[in-house]
Image (cartoon, rainbow, N blue to C red; front, side, top):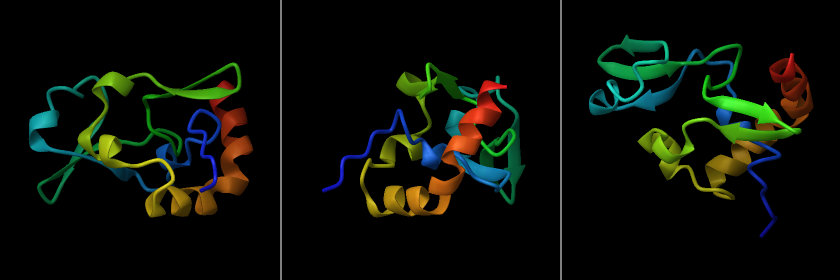
Amino acid sequence: MEDFNCLECSACCFSDQKYYILISFEEREKYKDFSLITLSNLNFIEMKNGKCPALLLKDDKYYCSIYENRPEVCRKFERGSGCCRTSRNQNLVQIQLRKDAISE
């Protein structure tokens, strides 16, 4: 299997969708410092400039500022899984552009 380095990729943390990071009702309090959106009884952390607001870039590597306490949907996202490969394929061209945008 191809080696997937999350610190170089983080494709799963990017989306053009404003409603992308689904959180449970119980998780709302935990993420109250982020902009939260409720839509049709579903709760989301609002994306900022096409990325998760918890995603940081340091020394050309991505880091999740809430990794130890990240949402359940993020915990279930497995490195190298079909979803991971799809995210990488959809976002691969944009990864460097996104690094430039974050570091600004």
